[in-house]
Amino acid sequence: MSDGDSVEDADFESVVDDLFETIEDRKRDLPEDSYTASLFTHEKGENAVLEKLGEESTELILAAKDDDHEELAAESADFIYHLLVLLSMKEMDPDDLREELESRF
Ligand SMILES: N=c1c2ncn([C@@H]3O[C@H](COP(=O)(O)OP(=O)(O)OP(=O)(O)O)[C@@H](O)[C@H]3O)c2ncn1[C@@H]1O[C@H](COP(=O)(O)O)[C@@H](O)[C@H]1O
Image (cartoon, rainbow, N blue to C red; front, top):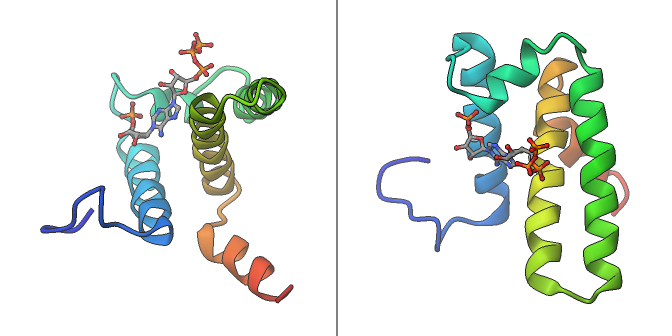
């Protein structure tokens, strides 16, 4: 996140872009204590993040069925984070998603 921005006043798009930038940094630097880096070096390869996406979508559905808004927001964030890791693994980025969504307007 750029200097002067706060989490409170960042819009959704810039939060996604900042998170994706952090993911790209972790992919490049592979710090030992980083969960994100561990996904890029996992022995299961991309299956590690694909499995996580499956788990997170199930948790998201359960939160929706319980009408638990706080949990639904948390599980949605987990899902979007893992989706961004997958896009990075595939050498894609949020612009690919943005363009696809915009093409449907
Ligand atoms: N947004 C996320 C994010 N969302 C979810 N997760 C991790 O995703 C993992 C899986 O979540 P689960 O719901 O399965 O919860 P869990 O019970 O901990 O799961 P298990 O690992 O035990 O299966 C957890 O370890 C979460 O910490 C995330 N890890 C990192 N980020 C972002 O990535 C940045 C870099 O993080 P590091 O890679 O840790 O440096 C951070 O600053 C965050 O902004």
